[in-house]
Image 1 (cartoon, rainbow, N blue to C red):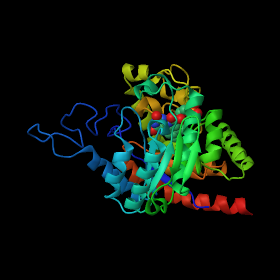
Image 2 (image 1 turned 90 degrees about the vertical axis):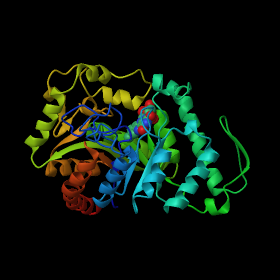
Image 3 (image 1 turned 90 degrees about the horizontal axis):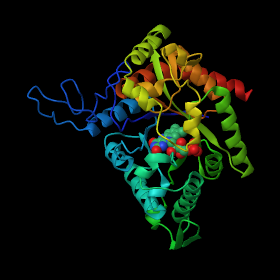
Image 4 (image 1 turned 180 degrees about the horizontal axis):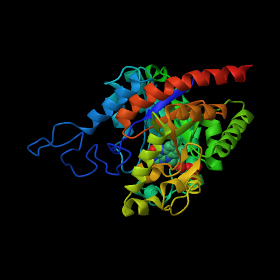
Length: 386
Ligand SMILES: Cc1cc2nc3c(=O)[nH]c(=O)nc-3n(C[C@H](O)[C@H](O)[C@H](O)COP(=O)(O)O)c2cc1C
């Protein structure tokens, strides 16, 4: 089976280098000379670029470097993926847009029609990352006070209704969260393919809902044994329901010509981390099982960058350098490819990769790492088939 590779689109600004903490790409930090997209002209005026122009550059770079599409995250701090996607679709040819969203915040019938229109307009390039939220203050930011398991109950019903109105003219549903009478999309819209569903979350409730609804179960990188075990659990649950689950991993890479260069960038990045970032690292209260699994990977304090090396070519401090999940891959191009191969061997069917800065690293990972992996992955798959 071919392995699909997605890239990540940074909808909350980007760092010009992993070695510095400042968000100097985009208008998330005060505009200053040297900032990009937008930046300032010599007269101190904005240069006319919008951040969407920069995202388009990243999407194009990823598209021509071998990535099938891009994940568009959704947090209180980001632009909205539903708006970003059609804008970027006009700038690319076949690139798919993985829209992250929390189902609870949209009516499922409206979401189905919105998605079917997007499928029609883009030639079927819509993909979803279904997220169910991490509770705590950021959930309340959205105006959502549902408990963890109620949120998953709502996600599951949302997907029942979403798929039901798409496939079934006259669809009727009576659930705890949604009721529909004589629903169903207009035939022209209903003829479109339902977007592929990727599903994130590590709790029991998440695995249960993924088994019912997901095309791909998606996880952040975790220690490989732990991840393999989680993949096996969700595959088993899906098999019990008569389906087959594919699994995917979202992970950052620092890939350099040599291993020394890769760790050097990590060391410099770590040394530039400010106290303010370190405080943020401890994070907000959350009920997310996935976030707790990430937090458990790292010591609460680290004085040196190498205290966060958690395995061969694995570093547990990525969230210090750029927010997001903790664990990522660091090494030479060959070593990065070997790690991805190992993950394929352990059950990964697809990846969402990322690197900082997202534009240049899309070219680098696409041109330097993926071709190596292609050979190794093919060999691995042939062996598996014997
Ligand atoms: C790969 C991945 C990507 C995620 N992306 C987002 C996101 O864009 N926005 C968000 O609010 N949560 C995101 N999450 C977190 C999800 O909201 C997830 O549902 C949350 O961790 C709670 O689930 P759990 O308790 O089942 O682990 C992501 C999680 C994973 C694994």
